Image 1 (cartoon, rainbow, N blue to C red):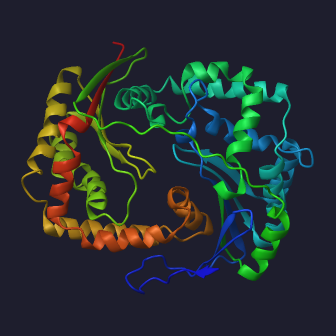
Image 2: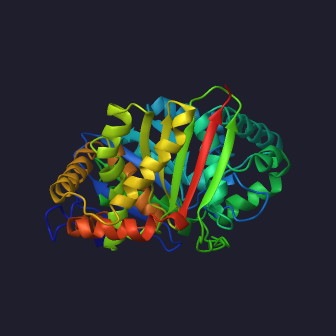
Image 3: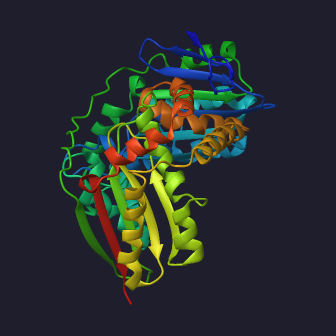
Length: 431
């Protein structure tokens, strides 16, 4: 059992003491007491997302189980589970990403044991027949078709399909349409997927709020000790180095202003690497609301409706994305070239030192101010836990962030924001 760090010691930012323990079956648990006046958040982070769907024809199952887990067990069927959580006033929900699936509840501490019983039961004993499986897989297909009505969804789908050749990041979290449409015929495969990935050594539990280790630990041991090991590592192909720029176009059948997406192959998550951390700062420094480019394209020239970024932390190299909705079709090339020119210019010059320093302060302040509830504490750690099975990377990241210089930003731009690492997708709506 190990103890966590306190903010201010050795430059570490995470402000709460925590304890962690691991059961014999590999289930890891973090207990993080916070000032919460009787409130508790209970997170189960499954370190499996759409990334792990390596078998051709079977994409979409990580997201599918986000739905199926609420079908319940023989002891607590879905309707009973829902009734109990409603009776507790619990806020129970889940979400799926490329690298993990997360189930979470916000409760009062007097309901903690019941929640541990319910969650341990469905993670070990999820049970569903073929007809409910078909019903739920049909609902997932409906969700996909609804997504196709969103021009941004269509853009992202084309971007990832164009950017990746072998890696499973090639498909979005919900999966390929043909796979989702065929999902109702894959009942037996779904059971196998659950048995492979929903295993104790692939799950991390986080309990935050008005809790104590001496209360949580025996309950976890009691309810989860019989969960059997059995995790099977997915056979994910390594994406080859991209050698040339990629360009694609996609038509959206509905009315929409054009969307321009520019993605650059990113690095795998590594909070110890200054250049990795510097690359993430490019999002705010070059494209944030205080950036010169944002002021130019959005405010002064009003060429674009919006300008934003999506720079995620991922287990494997993914994409750093610049995304903009252009007001007029004829301005697409101008906007694209303006963005690319801005990147090129900062490959030779330095970002303002004071601007970088202010960004670092904002990031640190923003992180600390977002730890005001147990749910935000646990939720803010979910991706870190999914990527590393630990939370110390948060401290490591901010230690590294403090060391980043304008020269590091320039190096990141020169090495990782280059034409050969780029994929550019233009989405055009029907006129």
